[in-house]
Image (cartoon, rainbow, N blue to C red; front, side, top):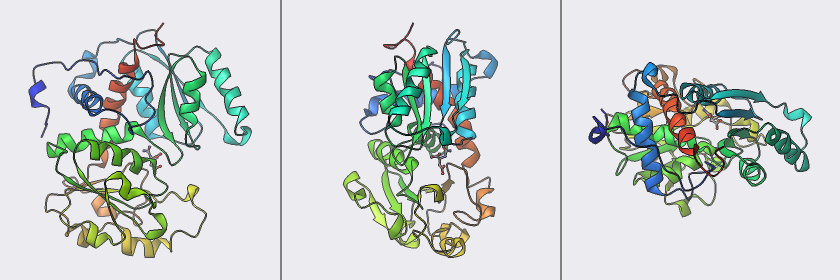
Amino acid sequence: MNSFKKFKNLVPPIATLSSPHLLSIEGMPKTEIVSLLERADYFADIQISKIEKTLNGYVILNVFFENSTRTRVSFELAGRRLGAEVINISVNMSSIKKGESLLDTANTLSAMRPDVLIVRHPDSGAPKLFSEYLDCSIVNAGDGRHEHPTQALLDALTIKRRLGRIEGLKIAICGDISNSRVARSNIHLLTTLGAKVRCIAPPTLMPKDLSNLGVDCFDNLEEGIKNTNVVMLLRLQNERMSGTETPSKREYFHYYGLDNKKLGLADSQAVIMHPGPMNRGVEIASNLADDENRSLIKMQVQMGVAIRMAAIESLHNKKYAR
Ligand code: NCD
């Protein structure tokens, strides 16, 4: 079901953002979020051969200081579909020292005169730092535990296309909330659009300040999942843990992994999401990950390209356009 019916025969305009960068969802006005979703919804339906190459001659640098498959490829495809040149740079963290050397890297990248820099970095705030030193638009493709704005946008687009709305839905975000930039961006976005967000995590993986963000917190999944319309699972991000936060994977699955029995407590039409990469049998039972009726995991990947097209295009003709 597509909730953007009013645009059925109309092409929604290029989204207008007040900032030349896309660094976070926190602080982004609802109107800007909605305009990105509407434009991406149009890109999700248009035949690829009909897409106008409006970013011809535009240079996008995809700079990833952390491993990524789906996000990097998705930004690359998005840029190419709009006619831009996209160059991927994987940076080996072992050769980079923090602080000053990050600025050295910024200066090197700046000398290449990109129009947009897509940055993923293990340190929260790195994309913002880049935005202060470089003369180009910066898109945050995930920074530490901070934010992953395009992931939240693609999640919202997926929910809207499938369930027809976001306002009033009960959405559970379950798992390693503490280490998740996906959770943080989704909390800001989904509450801005009027969803009732519940966060479910073991006490060791639940940040202390969450209730200030207008969400309800649960350490019992069976309680938290009751009557929810969307169950969004998160990967256990061991790379950001000190080692003592979780019990064995088996025990974690027993209490916090989604299986048929626990899903039975959610709304009878509830859908399942996961940003990937997922650990089958840890965060989610394999049969549910592959359940075509309930799992939106593949759709999330598809919507990722459409959202990134809308985002990159909206930064065109901004302050830094040449
Ligand atoms: C997420 C990320 O990198 O934050 N993945 C993604 O972008 N698809 C989630 C994760 O790594 O678990």
